[in-house]
Length: 173
Image 1 (cartoon, rainbow, N blue to C red):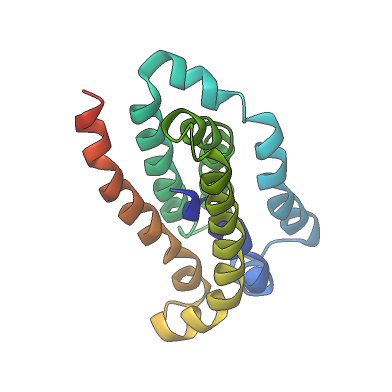
Image 2 (cartoon, one colour; image 1 turned 120 degrees about the vertical axis):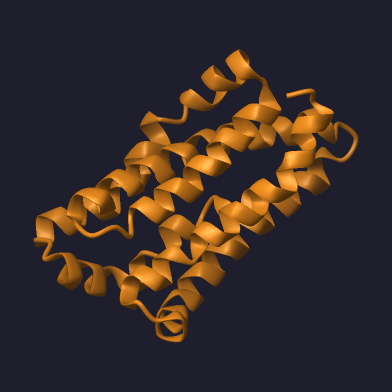
C-alpha cells in the first residue's frame, strides 16, 4: 500500500513540461498544479482518521487506495480540468493514507513497529525514486505521450487494492 503514496507526485515532475504544453497550461496554472499535492497533504490529512472511525481501518484503506487509482486515471483525461480534479482526488487519498498507514502498522505489528516503519519509509522513498526515474522511459515505452507515463501508476494502485481485498474479508468488511 505504501508504494502508492509517492509515485503520483514524483512521476509528475519529469513530465511537467510535456503536461504543460499538452494541456496548454500557463506558468501560473502549472505552478498551482505542482503545489496542489503538498496543499492536499496538509489540508486533507484529517479525512483519514475521520473516515477510518466511521467505516473501519480495512475499508478506509481500500477506499483511499481505490481513490488513488481513480484520481490517477482521471488526471490523464482530455483537459486541464480533469488534470486538476484527478490530482486533487489522488493527492487527497494519499494524504489520508499518509496518516492511517502508520497507525495500521502500529496496530498490526506492535512488536515490530520499528522494522515495519523502516520498511514503510523505504517503500515511500523507493517508490518516489522509481517513479521519478521511470516516468519518462515509460512514456516512450507505453506510448500515448505523457498520459501513458502518468497513467501507468494507476496500475500500482489496482495491484495494491487486489492484495488488500483479503484483508476486507478478514476484517468482516
